[in-house]
Image 1 (cartoon, rainbow, N blue to C red):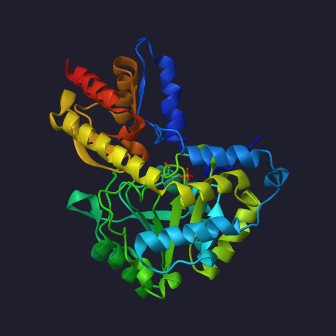
Image 2 (cartoon, rainbow, N blue to C red; image 1 turned 60 degrees about the vertical axis):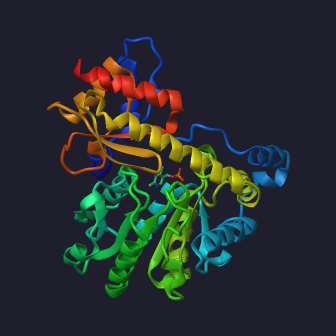
Image 3 (cartoon, protein in one colour; image 1 turned 180 degrees about the vertical axis):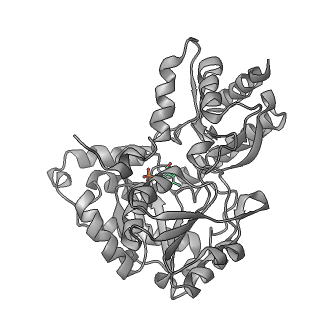
Length: 384
Ligand SMILES: Cc1ncc(COP(=O)(O)O)c(C=O)c1O
């Protein structure tokens, strides 16, 4: 059997690669798994009840309408309009089997081999992998202080093969939220160059403020430029039910829908039903979880303030800490040492950066408060 060289050259998922390291462990104390960003809490009861009730309805086993269940498209449009203050209607929403799929179908609709997109630095590894699959170049946007991408400096990266600017806010792996004014600058740059502005908002509920994440939907012409991507995985703690969304104007949705038809046909109805229940009845629960994650972030920041073992917290937000490890080990070796000697499983920074910058992504949101303290103790062992 022969495989496509594009795929054989593709990096293996850093999540799977990290989990493979667990087999090298010798210690018996419990592993602290801060690798894959996964809610540490179950979905709201109202969501569990809705799934249980739906499971006995045979119609739920059929395909859903391709763009999504009308009730979910409508509930999500209302949720976004309330949160952002702008205008999003049900027709703008295309439901996908998760936000990763949302990105893939949008990126493939916008670009092909030899095209390029401007991307953040560091850049979410699954987006990077998909651009590699499609042979689309990701051009890294320079940062200002605080890992905020600089819109002005991005202009020089645009050429006739550029089709989109991709932002992730709050970011993965940094957790950094791009300020609304900066997002608006990127939208203006995209508009002036007839590009799409793709913005992945998977962690929008996990920001340090209730203010809207951006004001893009206030512009009545937003559909000409903006493609906003969403996930219900963290927001409702249902990553296994695979539901996300593309929010975009009709031309972008129709092109993306062609690809959705080939890869998933439709997002699973059971997950969509879970989302309807969550959006309609779990507003308070969602706020409570976001508060809980924010409290965990504070605890993580205070644990890291003493630089345990020489580890430096460079940025934190949403679910993530972006951490520089001490010493000169290559990241793969540092990662292995962390698992084998210290029983902490993180994701290597090299999954997100072009060079080895000696960074790790730590998903502190996976841990409870006591485990966060233990994480600090284990990092402190590093230099001993
Ligand atoms: C920025 C970002 N986008 C998308 C995803 C995937 O979301 P989903 O589970 O909805 O596919 C993740 C999950 O970690 C993420 O961090």
